[in-house]
Image (tube, rainbow, N blue to C red; front, side, top):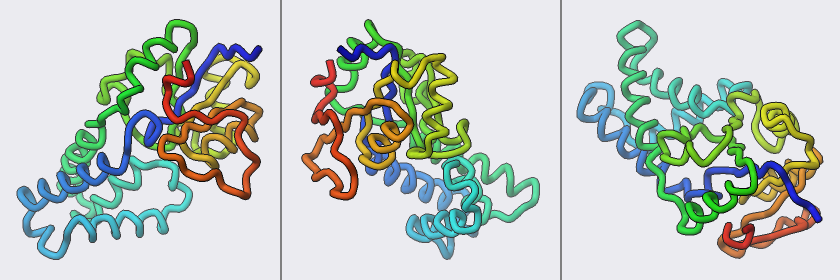
Length: 223
């Protein structure tokens, strides 16, 4: 019987829905910029700020895994490159980042993590840049492995290897849980780690991938 020592969890769309969070954060950033820097925002909106960020991704493909860098650099483009611009960009990014960490957990998450923590060490393994302490769940995890720290995003095997080094365990001692078939399930399995697909909304499994060994629709089933 498989009894993992470590459970690793994806965050965005696994423990909370990320779409509404990012939309609210972008709108809050736009409102703050319009109030504090109306001269900069005369030709901009949430949509144009999003387009600038997408342009930054194209300009810095080597930093695609670093959401903090991409967002901050996009804001910097509004202000220029002098010292005052840096201060303005830092303040604007903090507005966005504070809102980005105001998440609402799925209903099953608090109880499930609290119970699973009694028997397992829990780690977060995410391509995003959420701050677990700001999100209010830092105390439930033994560590947080980010794409920024690992230097690459899931499904790259190196981020899973980084998890193993930090946790001090072998791949055979870890179970990864996530919502993304490619990044979470296929990525973990390719790194020699067993995985569970958390499919909350009855999506079809991608035909091009081998099927997952386990599929759940709520973390309560993981218990």
